[in-house]
Image (cartoon, rainbow over all chains, first blue to last red):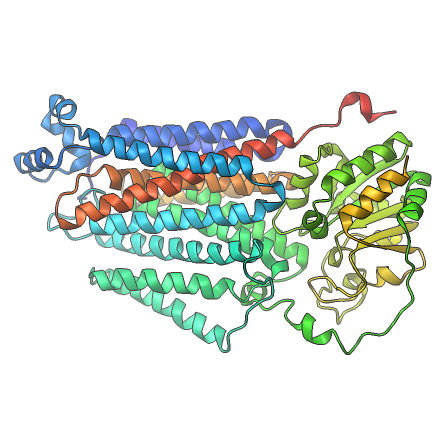
Length: 504
Length: 102
């Protein structure tokens, strides 16, 4: 093969980096080992970066040109054949500084963002980070296309190898989709763009046509490596990422964020194939499967197929159906004092948080309430539905931020049996995930979705801003109208704070 | 490495990923996304190669600048991703033994 012989030590180092990344994910199997896992990740990344820097020392162009002419057929990574002295005397220090400066700039931006970001904004941050991976992948693929010799993927005539062209085409397509898709997801999650799905007429046809064009062009790219083919693939992929995410509504964002997570992994893997780099391939496979599994878990938790989520438009009908089928049913309204009284009398309280808690930033007040109740001898537990919030594990992070011990927090299947023996189910900012219609009403759009059985508790306290709004699925919730339900209509944070006051 | 060896690494890594990710506790799914995001920035390897390559030929210089820009983006992700993961993970605490039973 025309590929340059890779330094075996470098290959070994990249392999070790890949193993570190596996250990990083492995550490997340329990909160106790997770921090060690994160450190493995940092070690792996350091190994990968240092190895690359050491094996690709920037050389002064003119000298290198001379070296290459002297030893025909050699490329940058095999330069040491020009002798070790060549290496030390002709380092392009300016380039070294430029690279270090680039890393420094990125480090400052990254660290400041990571320090300042509010935990409630985590979904946006993750989407923004995904977009950066996507864009970086596009830039790397473009750089490789423009300077294939530097990447060791050119044949003697300076043409890019056929296999590399397929890998490169796929890499740039996935990278570009990740980028534009994540930008849209970011804008939706950040509130710069409405959460409502935007439906273009004939979008399925347009999307399929664009996808087919991309696949066709990647195939054609193997025959003709003209610049226009490469850039058209890039442009079409940017467009399809945009078109795919635009029609997806806010409630489906957990799936979208997971899916983009997966794509960023596949983009890294595709570039790893191009560069024959095991660290990139292992990482890409890990991240790709991670995102895919998370998407699967989210879809299952909503009882929706991946295809129907991607097809989009969920929650769009809610706005139109609102006016007509609104029968008035009696419901009970309670005050903070009533709620405090009921909570105090309880033996066990299960708190069910949802996106509304995140919006109102009520997690700290909620933990205070929990502490007060514990002082009164009440058992307090938290029940988390897998799709509560805007990304997988969103509620868990917010509760952890508010210092709720993680052994008080339970997943749906672990706690659902306990509602029947519970005195008060305290629902704060969740709706669809508590709707019993998912179990009984075959016509309901959320039918079949696993839900928390809050209605089985002796009393349900339901915090909601007003009776008017329905959940994202646009379905009315029977729990509101039950005899044992008390509606607490207010901003979640204010209501919880008032309850805390009344608990004294 | 030939294509088949690379493909073997990839396929094996997919299986490893599958089993490792299923063992991640759901409570840590947000940190999982943050850390996978940080490690997928290993794409910086490609960016560094492009940035370090001396600009031989006309397109070489463009390639180098694209590489440098990619280094910046990937660094934001690496530092930001690991830092935000560390920040999140530090928040997960066990029940203090004293307060557990009253």
